[in-house]
Every structure is written in C-alpha cells, then in structure tokens.
Length: 209
Ligand code: CO
Image 1 (cartoon, rainbow, N blue to C red):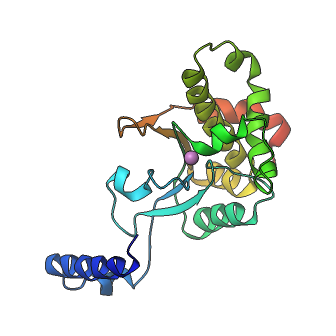
Image 2 (cartoon, helix red, strand yellow; image 1 turned 90 degrees about the horizontal axis):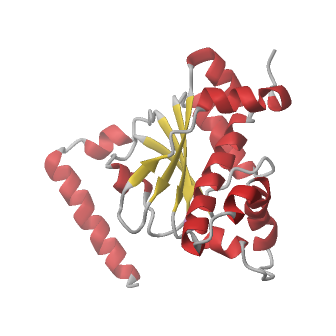
Image 3 (tube, rainbow, N blue to C red; image 1 turned 90 degrees about the vertical axis):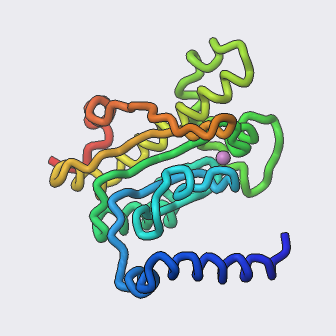
C-alpha cells in the first residue's frame, strides 16, 4: 500500500464532504450521539459503516479478532460500559462473518502463541454446541454454523454484563446477532430471541434483583 496515497485520498474525502456541507466537520466536532454499538471482526473485508450504509457519528464501533466479547477483556468491556451507560445506545450488535479466519484458526490443531487463549473461547463455543456442529458433514457449512453460534454466544456474553442488564430493565435495550456473508455482501439477522436467551440464562447470570 502506498501510504502517501492515503493522505491524498483523505484530502479528496474532506473536499467531497465540504462540497455537500461546508459545516460538516464543524458539526462533527460538537459530539457524537450514536444509537448503536457494533462489535465486529477486525477482518479487513468487513467494514462496519460501509455495509450498513451509515455515516460517521451514527455507530460506536469495537472490532477484534473473531468479534469476541470476553469478560476479562478490558477493552471490550470498557466499550460496552461507555456505549451503554454514557452514550445510551439502545442497540448492541455482535456481527460475525462467514469465512472468518479467526474461527477457522481456532479449529486447527496448531499452536498459535498469544492467539491460543483468545481463540480458545471459540473452541468453548464448539464444545457447547458440539452435537449440532458434529452432525454437519459439509466442512464449509460446519464452519459457517460455528460463525453463527459464536455470534450467539458472544451476544450471551454481552447480556451477562451488569450495564446491559440495567439498560434492558430501564429502557429496553436490545441485543442483536448478525452475520455478514463475504460471498454475497449481505447482512443476515440471526433473529436471536433476546427475551428467551435472557430467560434461559437469567437464573445463572442475573445480577439484578
Ligand atoms: Co473474522
């Protein structure tokens, strides 16, 4: 990549924005008021704003390898805390994607160093849903299903946090599980039943009275 080109592109982008609205950046500098927290994969093909067709200021974004929500990850937990408690978002999205290298790497018998503990969480997802996954003979379909189930389990991890439980109770905050299909460009809503999931796990993970 030609790094200088990036700055040339940036100048063009600034110009194009100012052509439409001369106060565009002035207004952006006044603050943000996003209604949606997006937690997705770092994969370069899955660009949050582009695929949703949203503008700067509309979505608060957190990305990491394989869109994981780990209770020991201060970065992800801080993002959730800030988005839910301070920005007061009403939607939290965990978005995975088919052909995710992180998910694929997690299922290999290979020592990946620092990635081992990170990707181990995906092996845990596999173990939780082993019966279903082992019954899928086609390898590509099995990986795709693991991507979906990983999204589901990360949504559950979002629901486990006190911030989200308070916001659900107080203002009906919603958690969504999505998958982006790199092959078609389509965004798929897994239509996870938030109330049902909450009901199922509430006895174990409930933090509020
Ligand atoms: Co990925």
